[in-house]
Image (tube, rainbow, N blue to C red; front, top):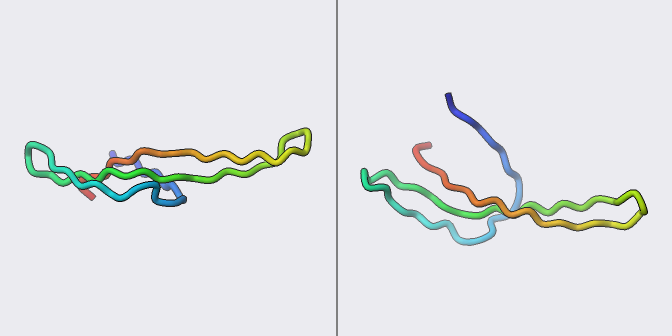
Length: 58
């Protein structure tokens, strides 16, 4: 079974490529997602979420 996740945001840092002991390349990078919403009191709230991602095989 393959799990799929879609994150839409900005690249947080340059991608780093490493290799497993078996020679399989693994890409490591971060993605930032900006969230802006209005709280119940009318105040605008801004948050940044950081996702660490490791991608391999596909």
